[in-house]
Length: 109
Image 1 (cartoon, rainbow, N blue to C red):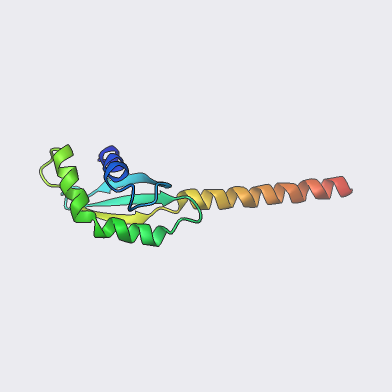
Image 2 (cartoon, helix red, strand yellow):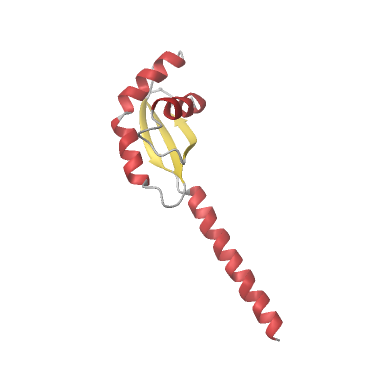
């Protein structure tokens, strides 16, 4: 389902949703009633605004998804901001800063 969602959003919504977005994962409930779609954005992108646009277009996206995949029921799509990538970048910056501080301390001794 993730691949189909990526294709639909890139093809059908590229003028509405920021192209610097990626779907990191999709968790479908066992009864197919709902699916949590985790979306990640590059820093500086209005993530809340883009999530709101996706949520507003949820019915349209489900309709397109229904044409692409054949399952008993197309789940309600719940879009969530996945901050994993942004947090990883922040951690990397912290580690680099600590490493620079450590190198500075050893060169001063």
